[in-house]
Structures are given as structure tokens and as C-alpha cells.
Amino acid sequence: MDLNIHFNITYIVLPLIAALIGWFTNYIAIKMLFHPKKEIRFLFFKIQGVFPKRQKDLAKKLGNIVSTELFSTDDIQKTLKEIVSAPTIKDLIVNKLEAIIYEKLPNVIPMIAMFLSPELVNKIKNALTADIDKMLRELMDEVGDKLNDVLDINSIVENKVNNFSCEKLETILFEIMKKEFKFIEIIGAVLGFIIGIVQVVLTMVA
Image (tube, rainbow, N blue to C red; front, side, top):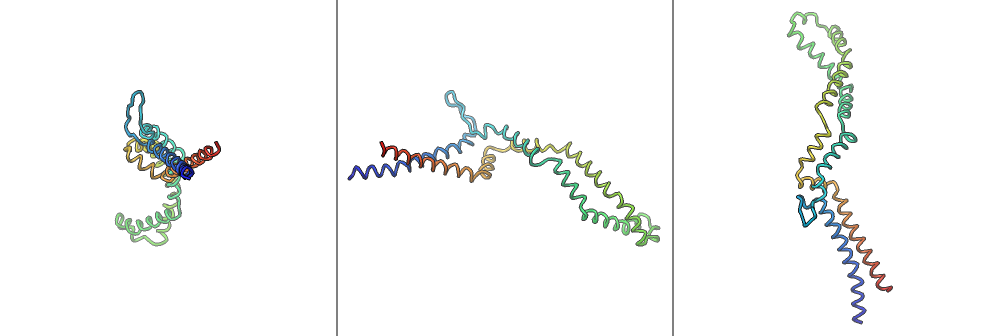
């Protein structure tokens, strides 16, 4: 009777131990992505976390991905053109021109106040607004050229990531992949448990 109880406990405990080992090995593997942060020499081996060791490569690849696939100066220029060409912007410019004609122009040329009328103001405003679209397009083209010259998104992202401390890099990646890392730990436990059950079955069959 005692022998049967012993075997039954073994059959229960073995899968649990295997699950614990599976979880623990995956947990250690995830930790070793970031630790040790500085290279450690052990006999003929060099040990360092994957991300600290390859931070420069990661920064370079992120910079390239962001600048080519996610965000570029062309995107900025396109957005600016869409904003500037919106009817609300044109209406704002026209209203500002009208205010300048009524309020500023008489101060600069007092005599003109005698001739200002709604009809004359409309003629001046229409003459000035006729070239607004062309002016805005030329302005955005010039701004776009300047952006291409001074804004290197690839280098900005690369330098930012390179300047992250190991602690900050670990925090950011854990925030992004927290669920995935937890899933890996759980999968390790599940697979370990399954392997434990298989071992129990094989022991019983043998």
C-alpha cells in the first residue's frame, strides 16, 4: 500500500517539477537577454546580455526601419502641404489680409483711408489671394528641402537608442514585450508539464 502511495506521489510531483524547470529555464533565458549588462569573462568564454552586447546594431537597424518604413521627411512634408492647403488655412490668411488692409495700411499711408471702401478692399484682397496657393506650395517645397538637409531621422533614432542606458533599454523593451515575455515563461511551464506527463506514462508502461 505504501509503495503504491509512493508511486502515485511521484507521478504527481514529476510533472510539477518538470513544469517548474521549464518555467525557470525560460525565465532565466529572458533575463539573459539583458544581463549581465557588462561583459564578464569566464575561463575562455565571454558572457553578456544579448541586448547590451548588440545595442549599437539594434540602434542602427531601428534608425533604418523608422526612417524608411515608419516616418520620413517626405511624410512630414506631405502632412505640412495638406495642412497648409486646407480651406481653413486659406480663409485665415484672407481674413488676416483684410484686417491688415483695414487696420495697418491707413497707418502706413494715411491718405489711403480716404479711398478705402469695401469694393476696393475686395479688389486688393482678391489680387493678393490669387497667388496664395502658389506661394504656399513654393514655401512648402522650400521647407521640405530644408528638412531633408537638416533632419536626418535615421541618425536621430540611432543616436537616441545608442545613448540609452542599459536599464532604460531594458525598461522600454519590457514595456513593449511584457505580455510576450510572460507568454514565453508560461509556455516553458506548460511544455515542461507535458514532458513530465510523458515521462510518467513511459515509466508506467516500462
